[in-house]
Image (cartoon, rainbow, N blue to C red; front, side, top):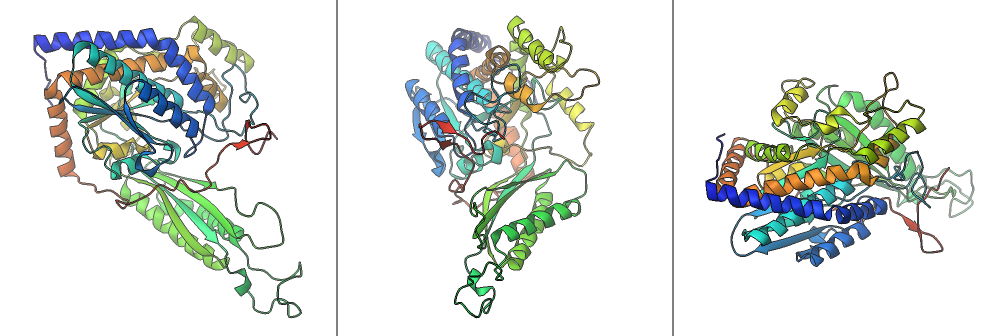
Length: 536
């Protein structure tokens, strides 16, 4: 890779545009903070982010973007575009806004759910609310700078629902929404060291597969032909009945748990998760359960490993269905390829992050952190935040630290669905610290609610939004004004594709399973949102 140095005129335009973009973010931080808190409080779960998506669509239209709501056949997705003049690069970033059931936490200093809701309702954990607001800040600041300085180009912004099941980006990719894009910037608030205030270098995220297995007992009468000779129907409560869908699900669950150690070797950082859909046989009537569904999601460094887990799960499901007198249906949720790196974009973005600097937590943020520590029975610290939250680490140093914990053969680690974007255009993935507290000696990790709460307190989360927004805007300005950088990024992208081609893993006409019974809020008799079960 060679350094691309702009001429004096270009450098002057670039620097002035960056200053304009940064000034826009600083001036609009009160608005951005308010917008963030709105999305944070909505906290809608995967595939059910109706109000969150509608807010983004309305806001982008107010800002002059052309917006397609429901893009890719996904009701809570969108695709927005804005152009300044003719020509110029096409740059893309995106919002996420899904929350996680079971993580309802108020933006306060102690463990408690948001007002009027069960602790089992959804809450923003990563938080995706800040992810979306950071990229929106960078997008709108870039648009403002393009207008002020007459910079040509097109900005694209997609709404990506259901990231927690990695559901939308594979669909947007298959439907062509990334096809004409010259570069993509992917952001996520920091969530694991050493990836804090840096960009990914070589080790991108790996494969993620997610599949729903549905057991349907739709012919229970054929289980025994003479279960009750005195009645044409099995009327007795002691009559033998078909095992039913619940039995099939439990057989699948138990066998897969028992066999998990035999699926793959215990290295490579792979994992398997499951979730049971809570519908179907909801009352304990004396009938076979008609339908039961379980979702499996697994993260693997390689496609070969992911395919082996798939073969085991498919086999377990077939036998479980047969034993319980059910038929089996399967539904793909996601099937993602490992990510491709791009050193040109990674270095360019990190240079902008270094210019902006790491987040700084002011007195109000420190006071909130100290109150949380005090409420947990800990001695409040003078510097309560992780040191890494306010420090930069170069992509190369982060890569070296990451590789210390990985096998030499392993090219990918953990998972996130931005990886699908890397197969359509040069892409950079970067992180800015979310607020995280420094562990007290001898006390281990903080409860999960602590990070969730810090993600909703303006004083602690706003520095993430400001830093990430300025970094995205600066990177976009560089790419808009320095065509040689984009050309070099494209050359690297083309080379990597030719060296390791990876076709999509799902059919071109794949449709997301938004019709499944994904967890969602209910409405009570007053019309207010509620969540079942309520507090126990």
